Length: 187
Image (cartoon, rainbow, N blue to C red; front, side, top):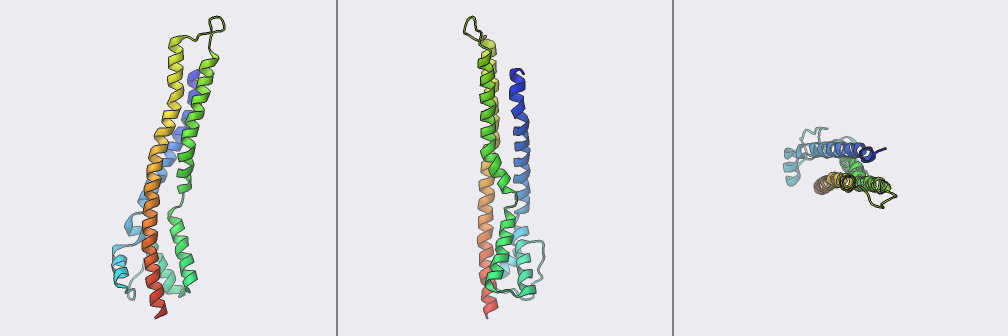
């Protein structure tokens, strides 16, 4: 196996990591648009605290919580449990981003170590020196996998942080909705 093939082994998994990271970030950004979580009409009613005569749609998280509330008339614990379920569903698949954030740089580093091992294994026994041009080319090729791993992990980290913050913001808004519903239920 030559040096290019040694580094190439790690390029395919890194490419897969890149594809999965892009897919997950785009999927969560689309799924976490405000109308899919708390529509504007519902947010306005939330501020006022009037939910009667409101047509609830199952197209949003808040709508599904309201439907659950209206159909089941649950106690506080059951309503909070259902809301936690809906909020947990918002972070569906984000564990893959966590794996990519941790794994892509390590995979790149592994590619570098394998590449460097191959470079140093081609040192001439007679002179004790490698061919300078192949040595420099081999080092550059070996380090490429680390660079690619970092290029994948850094945007995935930024996307994961942004999405996590967005989920926290929506979770806080949904908690306000729950408190309003529980206040209405106690009256």
